[in-house]
Image 1 (cartoon, rainbow, N blue to C red):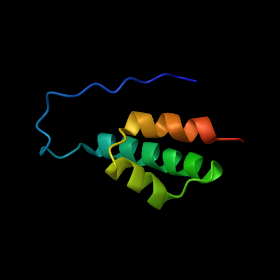
Image 2 (image 1 turned 90 degrees about the vertical axis):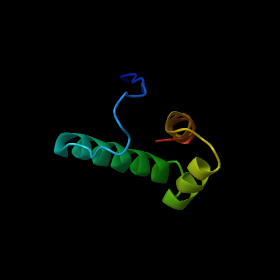
Image 3 (image 1 turned 90 degrees about the horizontal axis):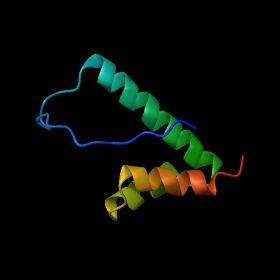
Image 4 (image 1 turned 180 degrees about the horizontal axis):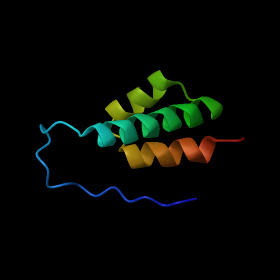
Length: 69
């Protein structure tokens, strides 16, 4: 598996994403949702975990640790 590191950007957070960045983000979210469903974690549960303070990286680790397929 490829390891990715999320590094904060110096970009203004209000600056809109480019079309390419939007597409990459949409594919990443779709993959995370798909893995979550296979692991028995609903999209709503993932949103609740993020709202409770999990980072996206921690959520990904959690989902992948529960993935049985």
